[in-house]
Length: 212
Ligand SMILES: [Zn+2]
Image 1 (spheres, rainbow, N blue to C red):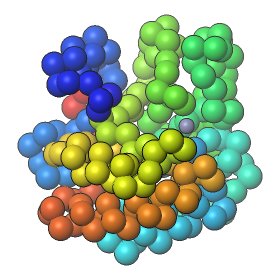
Image 2 (image 1 turned 120 degrees about the vertical axis):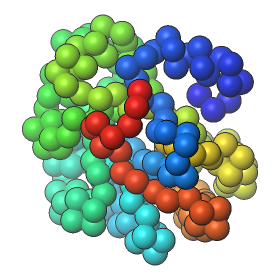
Image 3 (image 1 turned 90 degrees about the vertical axis):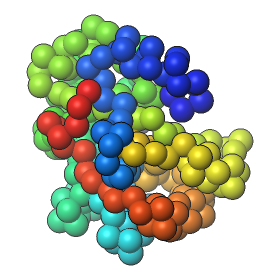
Image 4 (image 1 turned 180 degrees about the vertical axis):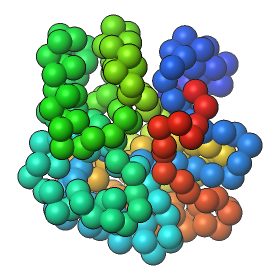
């Protein structure tokens, strides 16, 4: 929602209470997240960059990718990162019945097993969201979108947007996916250096650690 003025953003936050958009604005901590992995090439690259800065991240994984790349998936926890559910087939909640969607989340849960959930495309119907919350899921959105997947944006434009909008408690979205990789290789080292030089620390998203 980073492109909306603050007043609209606050209104949205109120409207969609129960969704996690960001962490505490009081501490110099940011929450780096990666969606759509694990990927056999991109995820190891991301892990290496994170390790270089001693940063921790939260990976919202697609169940189907977890099943195909179990060894990479296992590395995430081994390296001290956190994982979340991003459905099994990367479904769009607006185009899927609640029943089918919940079944797909459940299927992903059989290989991911995390109470954190991020809806693909950032889209989720109120009915589906309510069902997931009743099941104990915490729905995690974001306040800074990197644009790493966007073919119409340059790496420089993504970087300036990232640096301009990052603040205490920000939840930042990247993608450890094929379509983001070229841009990621330019963005990540530069952005991580920026975070370090600005004195930000990183933390993984935990089920109960953040306020809504
Ligand atoms: Zn996704």
